[in-house]
Length: 616
Image 1 (cartoon, rainbow, N blue to C red):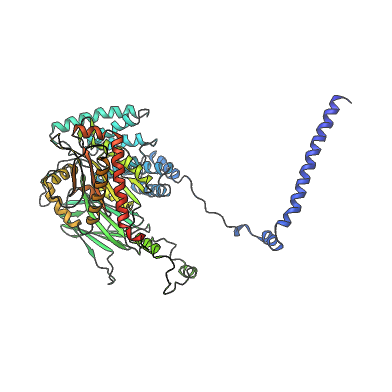
Image 2: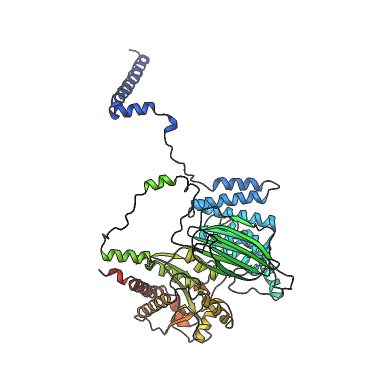
């Protein structure tokens, strides 16, 4: 047979074999298919309509992408409105809530700050520029190593330099770009802006108005005496619901006196879900809405603001179920911050929750009037401990100072760096003991004193530990001491509190007057017990290896402990101004040994408050 005919024959045999195999497989499947379904199921399948097939809800894996594209398109236009920006602000906020910790959350956080920057550029208001700087700061705090972090630092530094008259803060941002992101394409711009910031710092120094340490942002202008007609202006009210907590920030153009009070319910019931705040010697800003409905289903429901009389602005806040609240102020710029906390009956409200009350009632079985206990007394006691909030699971560790605030310095060490190393070592050991550990900071960033306990409250921490190094004019002073929040009782306690609060000694008397308002709500007794336990165990553990002086447990009014709704303590782990202790503070072995002792103290405190849960 010729070769061409052989090749043709073999090709036909190959095709025929595969065709036969395919037909056999099809016949097998068609024979098995009817057996897989009952007659009723087969009929239902044949008669089912496509519209009746339930579709799984689609989850957007990239919620930030669409609003970011809209923002980029918007910025190419010559004109756009504040309403356009506010719409994008809401969309980016939603995207950040959907994926708060991932790359989409980082992207949403950065471009949300960009929206705030554009809003400030259009309004020209100083409060809006501060808001933009704060938004970049929130992004940088959560994502310090993100690819957009250098750009965020450049933008925040430029805002601080050009809009907020804060060359020190701007210089810190530009230096962070050069130091932490040396391979970034923004390094060249950061170096150029650093030179501009240095010139602004020199000009500011010549003018005789150096920045005060320990402040969030220096004021753009020196405070001028207020005349009779010079009323403070309420610039903005910024509400934010976060689950069972709410924070409302009121931006002012200058400091103002105010008073606040809890109001009775208008329904006459014994409910206290309304708080009013009167700004004395103030006027309402033109952009403030008189009635704002906060429609996201959170704790805060409505805000009403009005010019009550010629010199008083009244702002009323209505909450769903208010258990407690706290009012504090922040400086530069002056802001009044109200933090609210939900009661046990609070349930997040949604638009769909009231549509089918009858169906939900049908699904819930009737609860008998009395059900005899089935668990052991030990289990019931443990449940009671948990329900009363007496358990210790989550610990927030605060590394004192940071960023532009170096803290005390000595023998080549900065307190902010030692505090951070100690906090991370202590956190690792506590995690090994089974605790959930969170931090106020894990990098060299600045965080205002007042915001640290607010963060602990928002995260619902069970304990708050703030780590610091001590300092003294006498280089021979050394030793450990631990503080809890209370009135200062000794000159040394006043000195330490004044240094950590970055205020003068005489201002401590004013601070102690503020503290009297917090005594009823602070965990004073519990904090003393916690401080005593961690100090004793820490000292005992360290003394097995090193000779350490004991300055005992003390009490003082520290800003960083004020407002904490959990037991809290401030740990002074050694004197950075003492040569011997500075060497120890630079030694991880010493920090680990001290941390193990502190962790023993935390465990002892936990066992103490849960002791009766182990009784049968």
